[in-house]
Structures are given as structure tokens and as C-alpha cells.
Length: 143
Image (tube, rainbow, N blue to C red; front, side):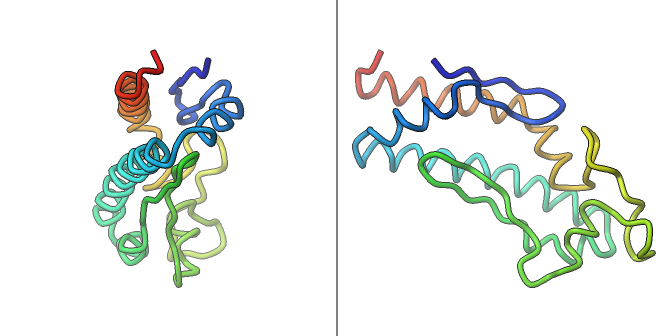
């Protein structure tokens, strides 16, 4: 059985490979509902990241419109920076280029707008997925 856990590192799913195999075996209608859930959750986090980027101003505000959520049956993600090579510098900072905030490293506090929002929304992400999977399992008599 897959277990969803949130931490300061983000959201982790133990047994994800097994869960993905089981989800691929579901019918098209079930897969469509899972994809919709993945898209909704990732879009909510992307919207929070956009708001944060706008509030930071400067280069972060410039790349804020590029922050988008998306997903498929077995994945959800956030992309940013399409057509804006400066997006990575706005998110992670830099030592060398002064138009960016200082580099924040690649640890648990990395990032200025996307990664902090993923961490901040981790509990909500977990709750939304647990509720969606429970609803799906009940709706189609899997439990």
C-alpha cells in the first residue's frame, strides 16, 4: 500500500512504483480522474508560487507568468521559465550575477518562490491526494 508523507523536503510517496503500476491498470475513466486531480493540485501550488514571485519583485516577478502546473495519470509537476533563461537564477539565486538574490543552495531551504511553496503546501497536497484517492477507491468499489 502506498503511503503519502510530507516533510520539509516536500511530499514523498512510499510505494510509488507499485502505485503507478496499479494506476496504469485502471480504466480510462479512472485515469482521467487521477490526471484531473494531479493537474488541480499542481495548478494550486503553481498559483501560490506565482503570487510569491510577484511579491518578490524584480526578476522573480518577470518570470512569474511562466509558472505553470500540469500533470498526467501518474505524475504532477510545476514548470517555469519557458523562454526565460533567467528563471533559474530568480528561483535559486546566484553569487556571480547581481540581478539575482543570493544563491540559497540546494538543501531543504533552496529556492525563493517555487520550492518554498511546494514545502509550504506539502500538508495540503497530502490531504488533497489522500481525499482524491479515497474518493476514487470508494466510487469504484475498490475498498
